Image 1 (cartoon, rainbow, N blue to C red):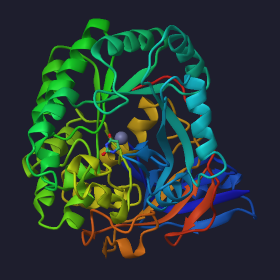
Image 2: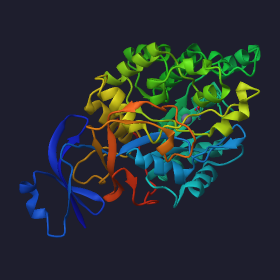
Image 3: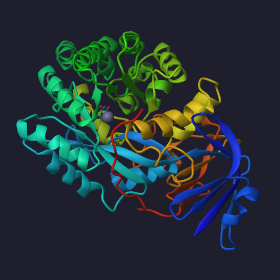
Length: 459
Ligand code: DUC
Ligand code: ZN
């Protein structure tokens, strides 16, 4: 079964060019003018006109939380609803997080997440392994995870799942031996705890960002980088939010340290004035950690994307309904933290990044597709439109206008933090390993996702 995409503009990390793309079964088999590849095209080949459309390699969202227990509730999106929404937003691969709960082995944690995800996903999927307990047997199991295609790990410097500095050192040391990589949630837990104790009115949502200031993030980044430097291992700072953290990273990079950085649409586009909204219902919609920052921080992050200091944009999609957010009505520390984003990332980054000239198309391709594929060991299977790669292709129409609204979203929440924001693109069609799974922006085939075994990072 062959499909020929005719006349589209192929976007890559190095440039854009107009060409036809021939898909056979699940792979791209040729790129070129139809005249040049005509020998490969037969009478049964399906032809699909994509003139004036942009073709991106399927977007990768390397930071989602589906079916996760948080603050006494479970995220509104599970793997069924979350991956459907991801696909609608042009994401053909997600990397979620397995969590090792107390006394669990890494294999048990991985099995638990396979049970949550297998046979439910509408896009391809993989997992990072969050490690929260460290024993000699867990240390041994790390190689097993690598062998199972779990080549990236996650550590928290806050929350119940946090590790202390000694454990962090030991884990990084082990990851260096197996060529694994770790993404770290950087916030100083002790200072947050102290600031929370000082908060007077527990019903005031604005305490959320006041008790998690940017210095708390920057300090943790600095500590992580100091530990990583001793071991001489690259690390990933996940969801960077602020200039203070950026400056710490830049300084370490100037001294030769290898650091990868992720940010998210919410930190690029939304700011902390939302926490001051008088209505709890409205303000709590924006509670996520680290919190939203200032417009100045946003501009710093956009510059970091443009100059390559920040390599990826993921969503940290962790969705709750407003009813779930109400769990923290009497105490801001009990608000389930997280915002939805998986459905809207592509259009938001095109509109507010490319259209406004903060980044160009090539950078958009790098940060949404190519770099996460390389960083998480999936390149060139994923992350590029090239012969031999999986036929994961997003067809984006850059000549339309629309408005984001929860009324027509399919992610399983009753709001979006981007409500009412105009967008100037539409993801019209998506191919997942050659299957035409989104047509006219509607899902036509579900649960086609498969588990992706990943190799070591290579970026
Ligand atoms: N931050 C959130 O807001 N939610 C989930 C996990 C995280 O780090
Ligand atoms: Zn997260």
